[in-house]
Length: 449
Image (cartoon, rainbow, N blue to C red; front, side, top):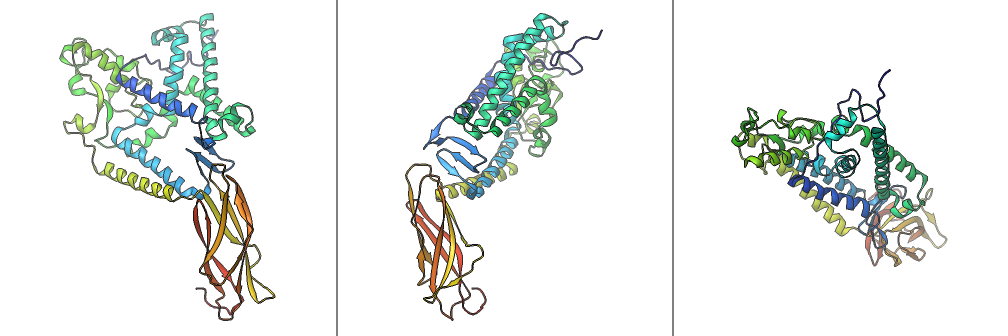
């Protein structure tokens, strides 16, 4: 009778059982993980001016960020922000390699913060888990797997709820008042994270994540990578410790969450988590020798000095500074309201009985300011001397939008051009917005000015 095989317990796949390790880099990673979790779990609940610290409201096409509201009219700022994030990735990858993968990627953060500690708590550390998974099916194995997988499902659900809170709002989502689409997304993410926690794990980094594939285009010989000091370490031998060489203890291998041997050289699977550095350092410290696995560069391994400033990093840094300047300019000059003025559909002009030409426009105004104080808007014209303006009183509450008719009248004269460009100036206590448009007349057809 064929043996019963359960997912994560046996089969053709060679499962990775990383051993626990502590050290300076692991403590640094824990600080990074803690800060990222604070942002994920706390940011959706914190409010500034009555709005979430961060929320991407896709149905309403707006983003709340630190008390400000951004709408589609701020698409240029969004584009600049995306470029900034992209070039930041290029810049830090050129300097420090896959620092994102090791210290900030959600896959790494969640596995190291939740999944591996739960496995250790329920099934024991590396040797215990390997021994249990190699034994015949028993009640002990079944209940431990059942408890572990149930814990994974709960973690996947909590993380998915927190992630969707950044889009649907924490309070509506956790109180059952969010849309059906929001809860459908929670369900999808829960299944995705659960599959990752129970099955994919390091396979996601190896087969699905594109970062490992294009990182070679972002790095060079000066990029810091986790590497093995082959010159000192080889040849390996159990008695080479006092000389500073590798004693083949395999500790750098058993702590690796990707299941690779860093002594084989640079590999795409390496996420630069530095677990192997802490492992080797803990061993070599017994011999009063420096670690054989460390952050280094190809150039440094050849005896050259590590250069932080080089053409690649200078270009990236220059682009980042330019993007920061552009975004700063946009933010400081940005108005907390937006408006558009368009001619009434199907109408160019009308001739009134008193000899005036009338153009009717639709003025659409949105007050994006997040506070509760209403704003009053007024209109004046530039470039259209002698024109009469008629518009209803316009006072908007916070985040209110309204479309009102804007009637512009001008005395009809034969000498006037067919089309007269002018500007509609919309003003309030928040600032002034200038919108160019045109006035059509019954004058003789002339070339537009």
